[in-house]
Image (cartoon, rainbow, N blue to C red; front, side, top):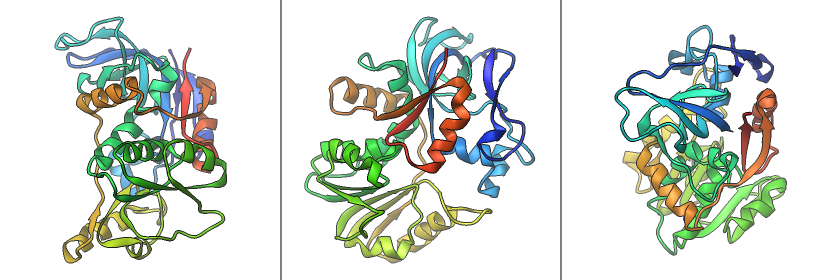
Length: 317
C-alpha cells in the first residue's frame, strides 16, 4: 500500500511517499481504509524527535513507527476476532496508528461512527483536536470570561466554539490571517497578537501550544481563575514546553489560581459526544486546507509555519 514513511528524525523533507505492507489487525484491532487524516503537532513532535525526552516513547534513534499520523476518518475494512461492535463497511472516525497511508490500524475504543453531516476530510479534522478541546473546556460556565490563545488552530477552533456554546464571553488570540475565522467561531473579541498585546482579566485562560511565560499568563487571571496549558511547544531541545507545564503543576498547590496541564486521550465516549454536537449544528470543524497523500510533508511544514487557519487534513485515494 502507499504510505508516508520516515526513517530518521528531522524536518518535513524526511517524510516521503513509499510502499509498505498492508497491516493486519490483531484480535482486538480494526483495519481502516483511510479516506482522510488530520495534521497535528503530535505528528510534528514525532517527525522531529523533539523535545528529545520524547524519544523515550517515539524511539531513541529513529521513529518507532515508520508511518506517521493519528487522526483518521474512513471505512472499516476488517476486524479482529475479539471486535464485536464494528463491522466491515462502517464509516468511522477517531485515532489510529500510521494514518498517513491507504490503510491503518486502530483500537475500537478510539473509534466512533462518523458524523453523518461531515465529509471524510471534515471528520478527520475532529478526533484529536476536538477531544482535547472537549476535555479541557468542559468546566467553562455561562458568563465566564475566557481567553483562548491559539484560537485559530486545530484545538483552538474547537475550544472557542465549545466555550461560546457554553455561554462564556470568549476572547480569541490569533494571527492576522485567522481573525475572521476566530470571530466566526463565536469569539466576542479577537486579539491579533502580531499587532496588539494581551490585555484584560479572565476567569479562564486556555493557552494552546503557546510559549508565553507562566507569570505573564497568571497576571491575566482573576484571583481564583483557571489556567489550562495545552501542548508543549517552545522551550529547549531537551524538554521543550514540558518545563512550563511542570512549573504549573508545582506552583498550583501554592496559589488560589488553578493551574492545569492536562493530558488528553481519544475515547469513543468523547467522539460520540462530539458527533452529537456536530450533527446538532453546535460544533463544526474548520478545515483550513487539504493535501493529497503525497503532499503530507508540505502539510506538516505548513502546520509548523502556522499560517493556515483551522485544521489541516491529508486526503487519501
